[in-house]
Length: 191
Image (cartoon, rainbow, N blue to C red; front, top):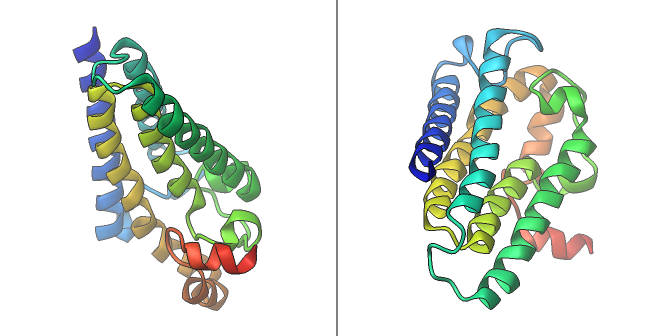
C-alpha cells in the first residue's frame, strides 16, 4: 500500500513538473495556466494537484516515523513549517481569489503576501511540503516533497510570460520590485 501511494504521488508530481516545463517552453500550447477556466488543461492540472497533495498527506500517515527523526525535532521543526507554510499558501490563495488561483484571468494583486513575493502560494506550499515530511518523519514523504517542490518552483516560469501578456507594463513594474519567491530583506523592511 505504502509503495503504491508513493508511486502515485511521485507520478502526479513528475507529470505536474512536466506539464509546467512544457508550458514554459511552449507558451502558445500551454497547459498551465490553462487557456480557459473549464478545459482539459485545467482538469488535468487540478487532478495532478489533488493526487499530489492527498498523496503527500496519505504517504506521511502510512509511512509515519520511518526516517527515525526524534519526536521533538518533528514537533519543533516540522509542525511550524507545515502549519506556517500551509497558512501562507492558503492565505495567499484567498488574497488572490478563487478563479485566479485556478489559473483564470484576474486583476493584478499587489497587497498582502504579494508585496513580498510574486508567488507566495508556491513558497508557502513548498515550505508546507517539507514541514509535513519532517513532522510525519517519513523518508518516502521527504522524497516526494523534493519532487513536489520542483514542480512548484517551476510553475512561475510558465505563469510569468502569461501574466506579462495579461497585465503588460503594470506586471513588468511589479516584477522589477518584488522577487519571484521571497526576500527576507523586503519583509523586514516592511515590518
